[in-house]
Image (cartoon, rainbow, N blue to C red; front, side, top):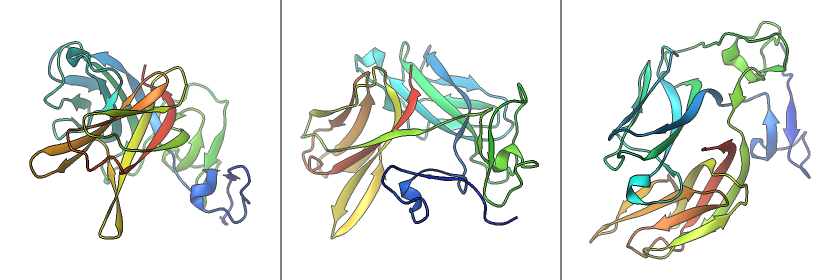
Length: 246
């Protein structure tokens, strides 16, 4: 097939010449399709969520540390959290009884050996958009760019802010009325080179380790800094999704 497909540019951008970053949608790209999502209150130091995909999926996880009296959902990222063919196991040494966990498990495989996935269809109505070069009449779920049988993780907006001063926080307002799912990066410039590193961010500051985390709340995302002050001028970029964590 030829190079056919669908492209939707952002307002004010020519769809014929737009770069991928200036497109609201393009069938030339896949999208993160949500297989399972939900919330769970921890009954111990780990939380286990079963899934039936049969392969290791990509996932996102967040935790509100009720046991520590900390408000807002923070990204849960640690070597003690991982996915398997049948389960998502979440823990990081801080997780405890009463903490609230929110998670997204995607159909998209982390295992490069998986080349196809599908799900049982609930009806015959909806919209299907194949990825560029695929016949929409015969395309598999894996090669669709959009399929209304799947929920997808969509970007609502991108927020930017400077980091907080040592031991403090900066509130970035969104006013959604719910705590949104998000991903965040810190931009640091060293030796004239820009580096983008994901949050939670931990750096050896010499005498101590400095940290930057984000906490998602109903109307703000708070950027929280550790005890060192060298990150207050770092740029924090927060990709906010439409999905709620509650």
